[in-house]
Image (cartoon, rainbow, N blue to C red):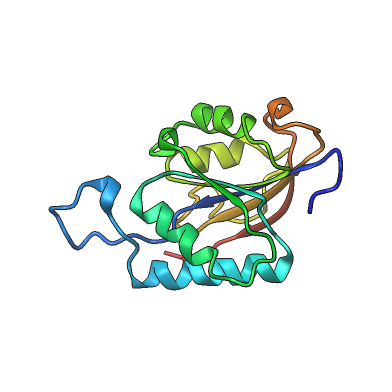
Length: 171
């Protein structure tokens, strides 16, 4: 739970997806085996750290939905409200900010795609994490960032305090 006057964002790029079926539309690509394992690891990591989203806003693309389903299989105590947001499929950072500003719960997990999610992540903290891969925001990357605000509508770039940055997928 997030204390009063704070908001926490768990910003996740979907786990590694499969490219082995050239007939599939980009929207329909599933996770590959590595991505499925990584998403489960991410859920376990979140549970171990107490990162419990109360609201999940997810792109409806297959790989983002599968990422959430595997994260949610972890022993999380909170069962969040899930909202599929079509505007998150290949969204710009501006769209992601607009979507986040409409969130209603104090702790939100947003699951999306690069390049927008990496650019959005870079725009949020006052001081970015000291990780050479942060700028690339690889698949499975997750930033946990807190803001001293009462409402998501008040969120401003470069005001967040990084709590964690995890790269579960690697290259």
